[in-house]
Amino acid sequence: MSEQAGQWHFLTNHARVLVAIARDPATRLRDIAAVCRITERTALSIVTDLEQAGYMALFSYSYGERTCSAV
Image (cartoon, rainbow, N blue to C red; front, side, top):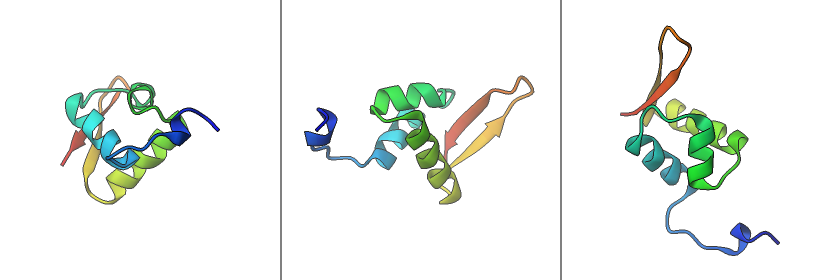
């Protein structure tokens, strides 16, 4: 069993991702995953869930960088 699997957290991964984005709206998916101690694939899935549920919106810039914004 991994070290993280045995730990209990007050916030869900969805809440932790939303907090990470609120702290730094220009953060990369890789950084969100590292801060929340989840995989990049899980972070992407959660960001997609949050966007589809209307909790946040993604904005694109001309240089291809994506920025998240909590609604």
